[in-house]
Length: 204
Length: 375
Image 1 (cartoon, one colour):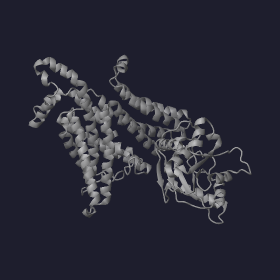
Image 2 (cartoon, each protein chain N blue to C red):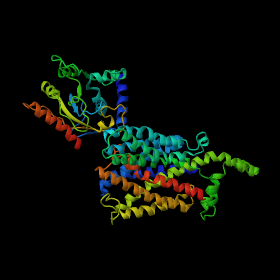
Image 3 (tube, helix red, strand yellow):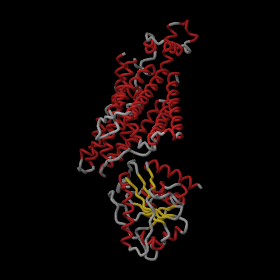
């Protein structure tokens, strides 16, 4: 309950600070199990996307984030653990028997949705980088998850890579139509399709 | 708050209430055969007026500081919309940070210093000396210097100019609207005196009625009472007149916008600049100039002006409002967008609503200054 209030306040603050307008194109907010995958240019991406979701959906959605960033400092630790309920991935040591995909599947169970940034790291420019294979393996093991492409506009200008202080420009978060991994679809083909789904939302 | 100010607020409240009822009526009566798109435009307009006038009236009643803060927030948001639409490069990041969190608030802080003797007297300057040059001189030098310091020279002048234009329009120009509250207006007495020679008998009666309650039992004390009354009334009367003036200004600008749209709907459309804004016609501009001038002249008794001054100020405002709208249309067209943001639903952004306000505020401020010193 207490975390819900903190989360609600934080979401409001994030919405105001990012000035985010939220668009749902051929898609509706739904608490069913989903994977929101988006382009990644800023540390604040996860927060902005998370705050763009309606409260009921937000409570069931866990951002996947880099452990080394979100474990730095008590504030970030509190936020990631108590408020966002983030799923922290250790990017520095990825073990064979403890792959991030397995961890995600174990953690979400049949209840939670995920926020994922398939580019792996933050890209420097406004262009969407190539997707890593995690999204593919995740859908291969859990083909029932709805994959929702999301495009976050302008975040690279609000807090570019290497900057500490944000400039309050307005963002736009666009949710696109759900997609799934097709039967027998090749990895490269699927990742290309997923990336295009995000890029397409930029112009929509 | 005095009767005139409450009357002005009440009048706008009643007008907006009627407009809201008309919208309700038109929404229900689909059988009238009106274009639903036009009804929807009207509905959104009325909604935006509520969003503009309600906080403005609230802030004005709460005092000068809150009004300045309100305009500061509007500036901040409008600048956000402007810069969001303006392509900048990563090297501009630090310069933008200064623009948003240093230049913008400081402009309004300088405005708050107006009339503070502890600031103005030791330095031998007025706050106007500071806030009228801070952005167009010092901020305008700071921006290119900070960008140059980041070491990216690509399209340097273009990037600098874009940020400067945003700061000038959204912050500097708009700050002249609350600056009306800092003007030294003469006390109300000369106004009442100038009302006397007018043939309209009821106005004179009103003016007398308004003056009567305060000196009621003190009439026999004569000149002493006059002087005392002047001293007591000054701090109360002057803010009322300034509040009315600012409200009058915003009202006239909104009327200019609305009447331009209305007159443009009439048959006979000669677009002024079809390549930039096909909706702005000569009919709209001339019709709005005429109607706004009439309304402004009719409301002269609310302002510190003579009637012809109110008419002239209104005429000028209708032209600058047009210029502001046209300029922002040109920028939007260049960027290939229709609206600046999405804060007020269907209205694009804050900047779409205040473009005419930004362009009119400095002119209206200086005209007022001139008129007040003339009389």
